[in-house]
Length: 226
View 1 (cartoon, rainbow, N blue to C red):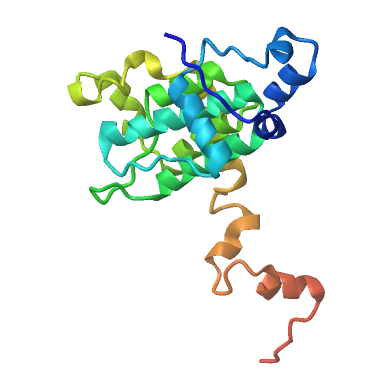
View 2: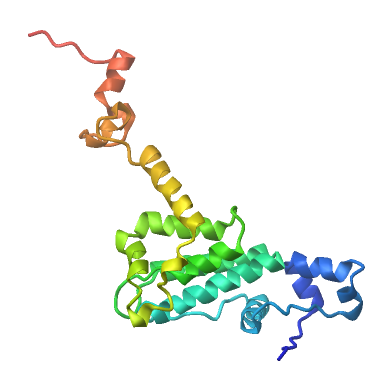
C-alpha cells in the first residue's frame, strides 16, 4: 500500500532540484503540494528524510559477509534515490558512507567490500558518468583480487547466493575496470626499465634533483683527477 510522508517544503526544495522544480513549475504537484514517487522504496525515502533533517545517515553494520553487504546494497539504493531527486549533497554523503564502510573492519577483523548485486544495482540505475560507478571500479582496482570475480561463477554458496549470481557482473563494469587497470599500468606502475622511473631504485629515492643525472645535466659534477 502507498505510504504518505510529510516534509517541510522549503527544506526539501533547498536540497533537491527535483522537488524544487516540481513545486515551482506549473505542474499538478505544485498545486496539490503532493509528489508521487510510486516507484521508490519508502524505506529509502525515510533514510533520505533522516539525513535531510539530522544531517546523518543511520547506517552502521559491522557484520561480515552477506549481512554487511546488505548495507552496501542499501547505500547503493540511497545513492540512486539521490540521483533521481537531484540532491548532490546527499549523493556525496552516501559516497562517503560507502568509503568509510570500506575502510572500517567488520566484527571479524577483516575489510569487506561491495560485491555482486551491488554492482548490478548501481550500473543498472546510473549513467555512465556516475561517480558511484567510478568509486566501485576504483575499489576493485586498488583492493580487489581475482576471486572477487570468480566467486560469481561459484554461486553455489547458499549463504552468499543473494550477492553472488553469475549474471550480476555488468558488462559495462567489466569494460570500465579493464580500462582502469590499463590506465593504472600505463600511468602509475611504470616498468623498471623506463628511464623516467629508475630513480625509484636510487639511494635518493624519488627526489629527482638529487639524482646524479640531474647534476650531470646542470654541469655541476666535480671532476676528480686520478
